Amino acid sequence: MPSGRHKSRTLRKVFVKTPGGKTKIHYKKKKPAKAICASCRKPLAGVARERPKKMKNMAKTKKRPERAFGGVLCSACSRKELKKKARSI
Image (cartoon, rainbow, N blue to C red; front, side, top):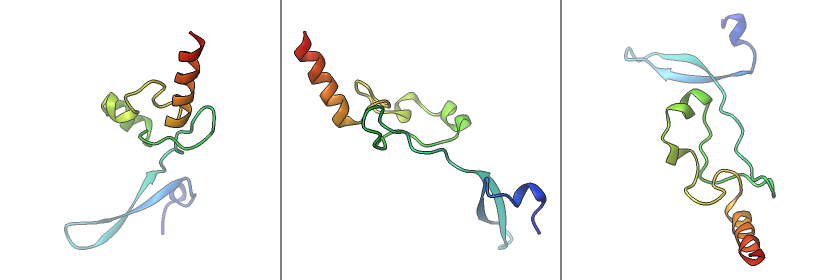
């Protein structure tokens, strides 16, 4: 029987096989929601979806795309924004 703190659905169950061949349940926190585009609200590609502790230890290049507005706008919206800026000059 799980203890009280494990009965809620805030934690996810992870089934881990031990060296002895038994299967144990580990309780881990859920991953955060996907990052979304600031203008069209579409989920962003290439942006990591991890907890803050793991994000802190990750390389900067693994956290978001290496382009203008990377991690804020999707590729289509960033393309539109760059065109708009280029035309206004």
